[in-house]
Structures are given as C-alpha cells and as structure tokens.
Image (tube, rainbow, N blue to C red; front, side, top):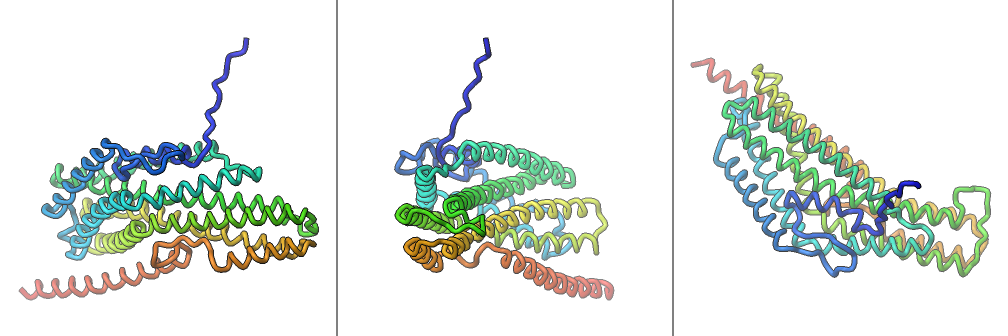
Length: 404
C-alpha cells in the first residue's frame, strides 16, 4: 500500500503571496494592520497591533534620547564634521523609522487599493487562460524572507559585535550598535516591501505582454496575423483595460511609497558621503585600530544601503521597460494584421498609451539609471567639498598649534 502524500497547498491570490512579508514586518512594528483576505473591506487593525507599535515607539524614543544626550559614537575626536554628521544621520534615521510607521498607518488606503487592483487583475487574466502562478510566487516570497532573515542575523551580529568590541564604554557601545541595527532592519524591510510590490507589478506587465504575444504571434516575423475580428477587438479591449489597471497600480505604489522612499534615499545619500569622508579621514590621519574598525563598520552599512537602492532602481527600470514594451508589441501587430478593424483598435490603444506610461517615481524624480548616475556625480561633488573644507581647517589648526 502506497504511503499517502500530503497534498500541496494552493495559494490563490496576492494576499496569500504577501502574507509572509507582512507577518515579518509586523513583528518589527513597521505596520499596524493585518492582511487576511480579499473579502475584507479594509485592513484589520487589532488592539494588539497598536500595543506592539507603542512598544516599538518607546524603544525608538529611548534610542533617540540616548543618541542626542550621550556621546555614543567614536571618531568624534578625529574631525568635527564626521562627529556632527554621524550623530545627525543616526538621529534622522530613528525619526525616519517613526515617520515610516506613521505613514504606513495614514496612507494604508493606497496600499489596500493597490492590492485590490492586483487581485482584480489576476482574476481577469485567469479568464484569458493566462493565470498568475501564486503558488510559485509564494515559494519565492518564503525564500526571500529566509534570505532576509539570514541577512538580518549577519548584519546584527556584525554591528553588535564590532561596535561593542571597539567601544571603550561597553554599555554605550552596545546601545549604539542596537541603534544602528534597528535602523538597518527598518530600512531593510521597508525597502524590501517596496521591491516586492514593484516585482509583482512588473511580473503582471510581463504576463500581459506574453498573453498579447501569444494571441498575435508577434514572435514570428514572417507570419501574417489572421484572427477573428470581433474576437480580437474584444481581446484588445480587455487587455487595454488590464494595462490601464496596472498603470493605476503603479500610481498607487508611487502615492504610498513616495515620501518615505524619498527620505530614505536622502539618508542613504548622506550616509554614503559621510562614510567615504570618514574612511578618507581614517586613512590619512588616524592609525588607531579602533578608528579603522569604525570606518569598516560605516563602509559595511554603506554597501548594505547602496545595494538595496541599486535593486530598487534596477527593478523600477525593468518595470517601466515592460510597461512600454507593450507598445512595441502593438506596433508589430499593427504592421502584420490584415484586418482593418483590428488595426484601428490597436492604434487607439497605442494612442492611449502615449499619454500614460508606468513610471516609478518618488514625487520629484523617477527611479531610473539617470538617477543612479546623478547620485554618483553628487556624491563625488559633496565628498570633494568636505575634503577641501576639512583639510583647510585641519592644516590651519595644525599651524596654530605649531606657533604655541
């Protein structure tokens, strides 16, 4: 007798896919709602969620007070610029974590509409025999959470271990390392949330393009498309509505993530500038082992933040490409169809796409490779200014001390 096999659980909507992510984020107090199913009218907010958020806020405020009132950071004796900017970035980082939690609460209607929009898209795509594989997406999500968990462990162990080791005051060093770790965790999961939403929208654009390609056989350049006129027109109308709903999803994502991502990107930019300047100061003036390790900690955190910003830019650019690639497929179908009615319908859809394109923005600028190169140029400019300003002050102080 064969052993009975346990049937695989089938996940049927976007809510099932995102459940692991929201469960982890809720543990850190970054969100105050629970995502259960598509049948609910809004997110469920339980009293336990508010208690959890209140505890998280209390811990963050304690870290904020410690960083403002106490000297919890090394390298302050190396240069005034590094000391001031380091404390400023840490304090701003804590405030950003608090602001992100409040934003998640007051702008959660955008996220709810976004998930409802994606869920509606999935149902309509299933009627076109192009279903979204939610079970596969759920597996990817679980693997992502496991990877993020491993990254959190490595990041926390590195920060707590190294900062506590090099700090002359072990207790303050421990609290300082916890501050950096909490800020890093908040950044990690919030940006991961943004990345997951972008990936889900991008995959649906790709699925829509594949569905269109299969219907009009746009992969074969030597085949003339011959389809039923009424069937094709109905198919085009359906796809145009689905494409428009994905554009709505991009707009909702921009509205929900715009302000926190803008602030986070600004903090990452400032952190990169301070890190490069700190490493410069350490290798040109200080030979202490503690200063060297501190610069390595800054460098590790800087690479961590920069890596996730690079992922956001890459996925946002790919999402825009997939959304615009639909227009390329439409033009191919127009050139190779023999039905005038179908061609006219395709032209109407093409004109509609000219006035609305899926572009991921933070309100001020789009996330694309132009932004990436602009950030690099700005970093080089600000680091050069800091080096020139601090070098002049350093040698002036050295000359003054030499005259005594």
